[in-house]
Length: 176
Image (tube, one colour):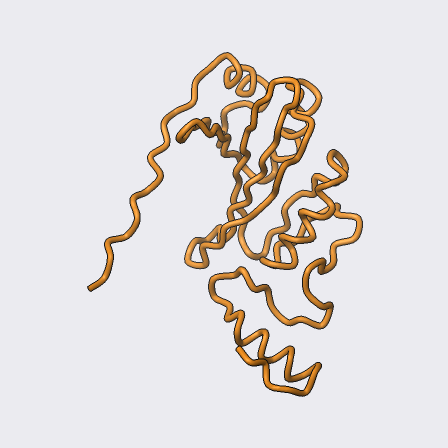
């Protein structure tokens, strides 16, 4: 017996004075404002991420990059969705920025705005293989340099990668 697929996230439009300021600053071409269970997010083209983050940082007091992660959808032309979570201490508010890129594209680095982006971008690179244009030192951060592949890609076998690395570098069976 198979389970039914999970329900799609039922977001609703997010409309406020704040989103009006954002729309005025970013424009509305390819930009959407939505909310889901109290979590507000802006979806925008990848080419606009740095501009949007600079505006949020300098004009709206979003002064902390909480997290950067990705979702892999191997069947989509724009395979990767990047999710940036920013926080404003002054406002006590979070905002999520979402964008999509294809496997052949590089995302733009935020390391010139947030020093902590350096580590977060390296983690996303290590786990998903997403490159960040303008990153000062994009290299693996969690896995050995010799590791082949990116474990959080849905078309990858983490057990196969582990077995290969352990066999090649330790000369023993993995135990997986």
